[in-house]
Image 1 (spheres, rainbow over the protein chains, first blue to last red):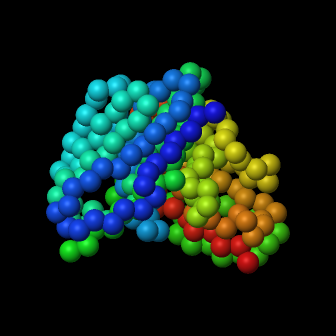
Image 2 (tube, each protein chain N blue to C red):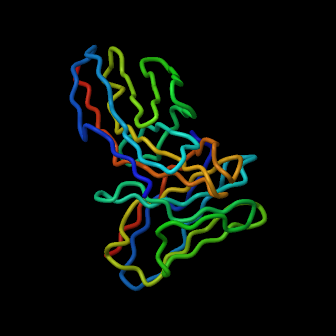
Length: 112
Length: 114
């Protein structure tokens, strides 16, 4: 069964304290791995797509990496406005559907 | 702003009732996805439509149904509502239907069943 597990469930950081979020996945074949940011009561906001092991993408203080079994979201020198829940999702290859399988997220709090 | 719109923003109703949630995809997107988000289950895929036709089904209850119209907007119908149906319902859209494309999410409809 295709599955996504994110850790930790919650992470508290001081402003400027860099860290990483983990996303482990089990999927029959990976079509793509997606990272989203979600603020309370809002819809997920797209951040990155990664397609193959070794791929990396960056956006401001965020950098996403991908291996054959997991992905990391590295946050460098975070600011309070980076506080949100970060969701990881996979899309399985095979078939004609495009639905995402989500992990339960990591809730990040950044204190000034 | 993702370009995906959903109405209504909030919906409060009673058990046993029926409601309709509406979604308009981003301009140019042909696929619409519906997801349910509850506190304990996280985001769960319900159903996908591509250019008016059903493409994939997830854990969608038989009491729920959806459709995509010729102008590509979509509606999710929830009937015989139960307390456990209270959740956030999100619509997402993408250019293609077969995967490999980013999905952009709307702001959601918060459904409360009393």
